[in-house]
Picture (cartoon, one colour):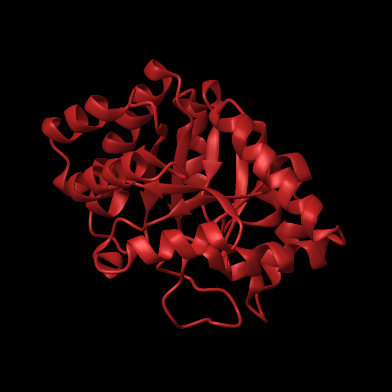
Length: 256
């Protein structure tokens, strides 16, 4: 059983291939696939995919890179779908200081609204943080996000901050970078994060793992990530699949 907790099968790169990618993923052992909404178009596509496939679930949120385009209608759209039976979380939301397309104060305003919605509807958060880990941690702390917790998606922070986010009721999700040959910090994070706080994802079509790095990522490439983490943690691969699957089930409150 494998739970890929972060995919973007709802973006244009998969417009002609998402059916095949989902079918291939199921054949390769993926039991559940989370498709993450981050603006109007991708939210609606995530809902469509979740309704079409039993194995697919959705999230609804607004990405910090697109924060400058968020309006009241954006939050109404999130709230429209937030109680959909296959919507598991709010996000992806957070802070991104790398691309710098939205002013920090705008990103924080949009992030705050989504934290408030997550708390109101008792949904975990899917948090994006790039070049902003300290601010992200402090913001989550100040806004009371530990009440619902969630996922630090594609975690790229320090080893030292792992315990900080876990202390806020967040799980650590690892993606393709943990497989990169010179990625010392992601590998060390994989080594020290407690098994009961660990999740896996692909963030496809981005960040393809070794040995297909540089090509379009697919949802079923999460198996490469699991294999690498199993080696690092010196744990049986099937046991790691079971643990990360159950961690996601517990976080999202999915009845089995």
